Length: 206
Image (cartoon, rainbow, N blue to C red; front, side):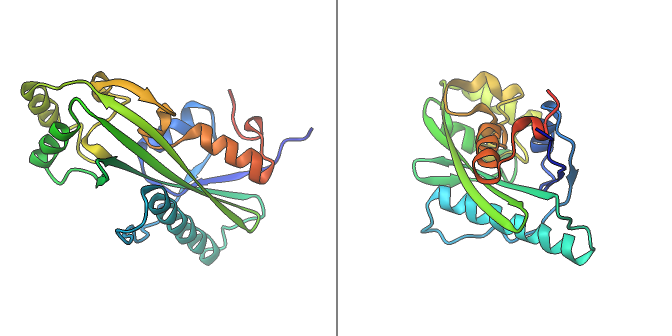
């Protein structure tokens, strides 16, 4: 079967999402969305991340239409990720003190990571959510302070990077690992296959 011709655009400036796609051999370009990421508090986490991902996707599509870049084979991928602890959404830390507070909350407890995907292809946009549950071991005050001072928590939802030094905090993971990093790849592959008939070897060079 002939492979599909795809012009893949990642609607995100996240280095983690870029690395995930690059690791599995995807050729793509990046267009940032600058979309509004505020949502009503009553929305459930899975609905909220899908809503934001859809806005990001739509914003990038508008940019592409405006500059004439949108093609018949354009495939736009947008994603939004949040960490939820005890029903409370935990975003990126505002500063080192905020990171210390967040890590103290997550210590010796479970939290959930939700990601929402929005994918556009040939006039159709589909959203899908993914959830991964993570259990942190008990963290000492000393290691929380040291990790916060390292700067790694900054810019990370939940104040940690599970693919970096933060990996030593995760005692157990239930669900997709890459979802915690920032892009649920397995969920994305399923969406592309089921909704658009796009197989992994149509765009991945394994």
